[in-house]
Image (cartoon, rainbow, N blue to C red; front, side):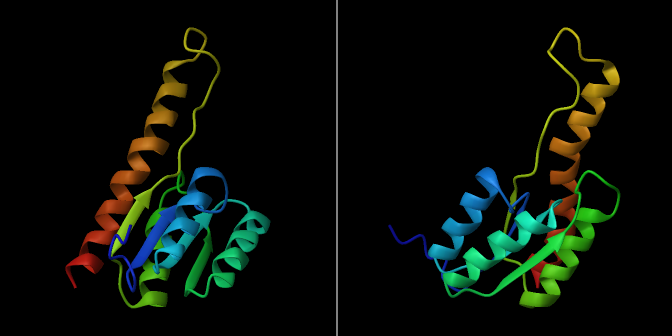
Length: 132
C-alpha cells in the first residue's frame, strides 16, 4: 500500500531500538528521510546504518527526551538536516518504579512526564517547522 510518504521528512523519538527502530525502518521503506534519537550511541549508530542501507537521508541524535531541552534539540537538529519536518512519531516511553501497588507518586509523575510530556514538547517543537 502506498501511503504517499515518499520524500517526506519523518522524526521518531526513541527510534534507535525496539518499536521505534521498526517504525523508522518502515518509514524509510516508504521513502521518508528518517531522523531518530535515542539514549545509546551504539544503538543509534546501528539503526542509522540500517537506514542508510535503505538509501534514505538520515539524521541521528543522541538524546534523552526525558531531560529538559533534549527533545527540542533533537527536533531542531533534524529540521536543519532535512530543511523540513513533515511527520513526528513520539515513540519514546517507559515506566519508572515497580508494580502498580508498589510504585510511588513520584514514579507516576516521572512516567507521565516521559510518556506524555516528551510527546507534548516534541509536538510543540515540530509545529513551526511543519507550518513552513
